[in-house]
Length: 451
Image (tube, rainbow, N blue to C red; front, top):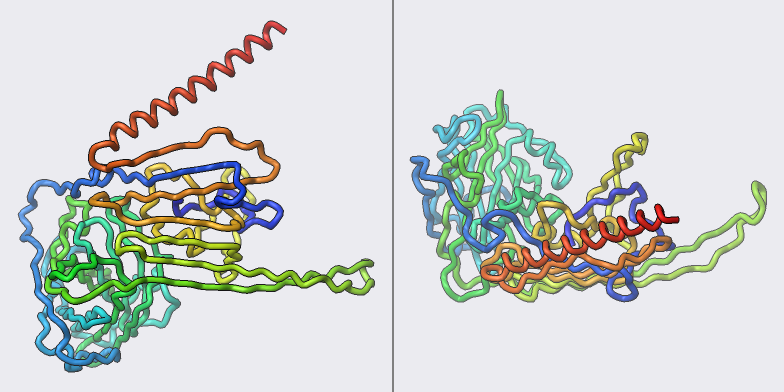
């Protein structure tokens, strides 16, 4: 299942045209996401030849020495003795040049949370750009002063969590996948932030519960990838990082700082159970326009959503009779130009979970076409050393359409050894089906000529 968009303008659809997952479907689609390039075969990203830049610095962290109160001030006992990480590299508009302002960050943790605190020095604090905005309003945020915290807990240089916080504590978070160049701003984690502007500039504090992150469950010392970035918009937008950024290398996480020393932490069980109950009633006017309204019957509906983090790498999602009433409505679009289809973004949590794992070079599935599912089941996550081996199963029926007899099939048994063989077999099967269709069309043409 990919994070798709529908090609129709029907919104989420209606009850008369139900898409049914697993229970009573006639169209079956089994899809395994296959990423491109080196990520496709589970190899590490290939970096270009050395560019002369120094390697990213490594920092060691330890547990907080005391409590930390999330108030935007970095004078709590928990910050004492933490290593100072300086942001010394401006990567735009300069190319790894000294930044115009000084910025420092600190990282620590306790049994439940990861803490990041940053101080942004500014020679002219009155020029700091800070506004209140809705969460994930990235178009507004990029115009303001803010810090960006990119975390790669598996240190595999493929996927990362992105947390942005403004000078007033405003939040934006996303999933980052470097293999596909994919930022999923629909992902929302539970985390806290605070910001404070003073006569030296501004400070931000961030507390991220470990339950909101995925990382290896181990008793040993862990090393994570970190990129700390400050956005300093003035006459131009200066972007300043804690590590140099090679413009010849599209792998952002390959140049991340390494932060080691995480120990005695756990990602949590990540079990989420969300029951829902809705009722509706439709009253009809028996005589138009002045007739009385005939009271309709109450139609109750019960649904449930379930999410289980089986392991730090693997998540199981299930849903039964969802109505997605908590999802915000689509922004209206004008269907004037009939030559081009309308596209609506996916916003439903069930389909957004692990959406980046299901990206393919050609978007194979538009999940918005699954308009009104009765039930659903999805398994997503990282398998072995392959960055994106995920499986989704759909069974759907659309009234008024002839059932499709064939389905696209992809099989991944081993991302290292069998992928090439499986792809060759898949393309061979596809070619045989195309040839069979071509032969059938030609035979029909010959029959028409004879008649």
